[in-house]
Image 1 (cartoon, rainbow, N blue to C red):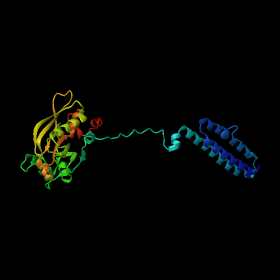
Image 2: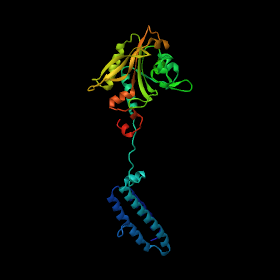
Image 3: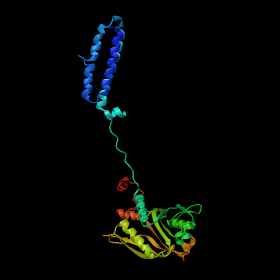
Image 4: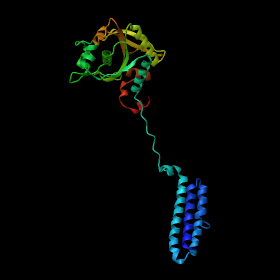
Length: 332
């Protein structure tokens, strides 16, 4: 047999063998291809090896080198086909699926106070209230003067506020946002203001030097205490349940007149719980922002976000919100 014919047969054998291993889709097909091409008794490689005897002695070395190349290529194709069928994921992605898996990462979620604030905003939004926000570092005018708190009032005492070196202070109430809204918006006004406030209180289970408030404001022609009471009752029923009761107790705040404390009682409860303050906007506050108290009236209320969240979920210590204890936070 001449060398060129023998080499051509080797190349045809290699091409058909590689195609058979490549297209095998089941283990039995791979095994059939192995027997056909690499079988020790009747395999095509074995037959090609036997043809070496028919080659001229001077050409046997060249034929033998090409034969070894073809045999190694078919053996590699066989191993690759076996691996592909035994570990299809590895063959496709290059990943070692025999390695131990990694645990699914723990996903975070919103803080319970953030969840509460979002729910309150949504609830008041359904009652027609927009949302307003303002700076946490305030000036004396917006924090006191515009809210009808005179210079001699004890609420301005340095022991009850966080004053800064430039004469500003950390806001002690979100009522400052109401002033800023009324300064730039003519009546009617219907907003809730929500955010952090700061007071140097002694930290205990029910007090903190930083907490959150949500305040509501409605100003228009003919607004009365009945509108305030109806709004707070609708809010209480929407947030705490249809069976909640609400009552007003006379009180005093410089920026509302008359002023009331708002108490709520849950079904099965044995005591009224103070939830915040409210009242009709004082005429002096309306004048401070350029409103005519003979033309418009309004009501305002302020509720503690932490207190609402604590009552809703049965939490008895306000410090839990800032301890960052995952065991506590993961319950929400």
